[in-house]
Image 1 (cartoon, rainbow, N blue to C red):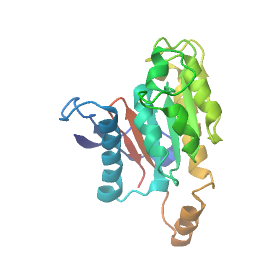
Image 2 (image 1 turned 180 degrees about the vertical axis):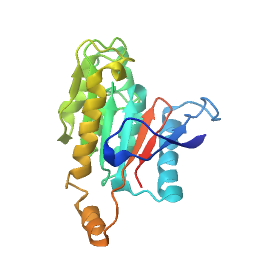
Image 3 (image 1 turned 60 degrees about the horizontal axis):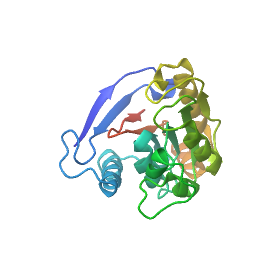
Image 4 (image 1 turned 90 degrees about the vertical axis):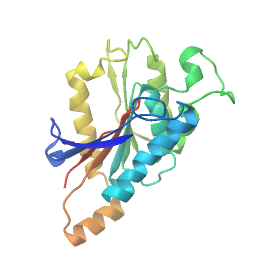
Length: 221
């Protein structure tokens, strides 16, 4: 189930007009089906295609956001999109099995293997994690950041737990800074910028937020 809603919130000036796209994973909320790993990959793919086909978004305009288990579908999709603008990972996991056991290798039956896919992501990556996370250990976010190809200054929130990071003032400040930076970054978006400038088009930014079954898209037009 995918829904769009226009909304306003505290964002950088270039993100004045926003839209929210919320979707339920298979088997949750108003979505039918079963909540399996492969189905969640199909779910985020469907949300992405909806942006491209129904709303005229371009890959290089999109920033993906994944929180906790939602980082799995986010990293999986990002690894297959070479021109994505950026991704934000909030309390991400290395893999499903590693959340429960400190294994040193990847097993075939593991799920959401972010540790093996993050190196395939070729866009700027912001990682945010609380140092006192009681669900997904802080080491998950730290290790993922170390494995990123295009690292952005991470945000390690001292004392932050799994579900309270948005309450820290640094959270929004750092996220705004990241969005502003990738908006101006020439890497992998240079071609789009040249076309944009030559045609005198306005800036547009889209953010797909995947938070354990949700996606938000913010768009300036």
